[in-house]
Image (cartoon, rainbow, N blue to C red; front, side, top):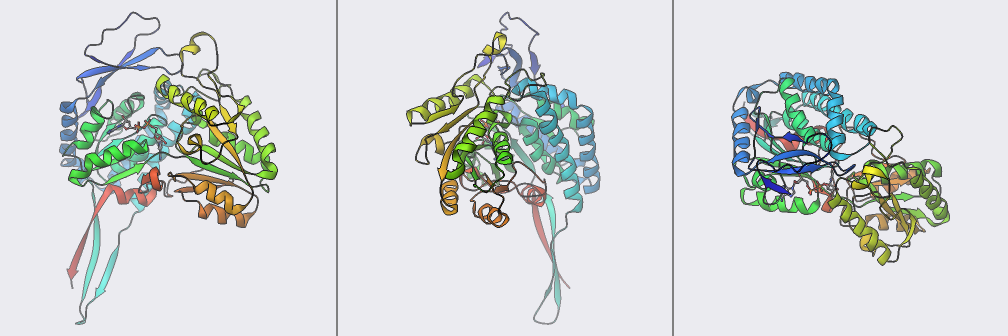
Length: 500
Ligand code: NAD
């Protein structure tokens, strides 16, 4: 809900909501309106966020352009890499603040924010400092028919002012995954975090300045997508490219926005990821892995499994084992060490997930676990909680099995042959990630290679080497990021040819 500034604060219990402003040219900047940010744990209002209008977006792009033409644009690779390593050190040093920001916005367990989100943020900066330091470029000695030769070599230049638009599920991890290579290669950026998670991006902008990134290199504008800061940014004539993580339909809107000026895009989009369990798998290991891939971050990871194909002879064992794992999950407050599972991001997202719970039953599903909204008692009942859920009795013809739900829910479906399992897994418009569970080495390689996805895991899930390519096919994205793949998106090579 957007209001004119200043917001008319209704009387409420608890601490006063924080005010979060845009960050432009190194300074906090007011917006044209403000919106409320609610805690998904209990529904209380935790922040009032300044929404950037066209004017603030324009200022942010101008600040980024000026910084590109300043010392940052002329800095050596070694110096930029040194600054990125310092950013990682400051992230480690201020980890508790970042954890609090991330947990406050998302309600995720503190331990998860510490081990995954904040640890990966620091690792992203270190990894791209290494990658850019080690990167080489093509050169060719070209032999000419007259016996002379020419030297061809390429130099890399930054893309320019890059729009970085990110979602709410792993806000700091996904932002730094794009920011680190963009900065490593000398770009300047305007970041548009999700309206649901404004805090960690704003704090990171301060951290970057503390670590020595010149002001104006990273600017943050807050707001929504269509008709707000997101759309204003993607339509702005001063941006040289867009790197985006979010829903496939938003990617499509962004493509339309940049089409008139033919700007490059890098898209990491939605998924409807499959896991395949063969009867020869170590079933205990597979069931534990499936529980993690279905329920991590309350199912709100783009890589999460929502379709589980199980070889018929072990279907009942896997179904019973996974249902047991889902009953063991502990929904609770983020600071409680016993908590395994937080709420969904918002009441709005819970409505979407709940609508799929209803649809699944209409489509003839049998509930194996969950399926509803839990009663946790006290102030938690004002939060966006939902039960970890499993269904049987569905197949690939059902919408529940075809559309991304982005919650802690999966359908289990039996199969009889390897060919059938591959066909079922690949029968989707998406193509982000897949997991194969088997103890047959050759089968593991064979099936993993035939998955029509960007990332294909065998006997594990979400094990990442930051140098490896990350992205999706079909509705799941355009391009790859990671290691030198990121360098390719964030730079433009110029080939120099010298007649010798
Ligand atoms: P979303 O697409 O609704 O929003 C993402 C960002 O885009 C937000 O900052 C939003 O404000 C902005 N936005 C929305 N409409 C816009 C427009 N028209 N122009 C410019 N910006 C706009 O996605 P979400 O709900 O925040 O995130 C969940 C989605 O992200 C899921 O589909 C999930 O699979 C996907 N995701 C993908 C990856 C990946 O790496 N492939 C990673 C995480 C999440």
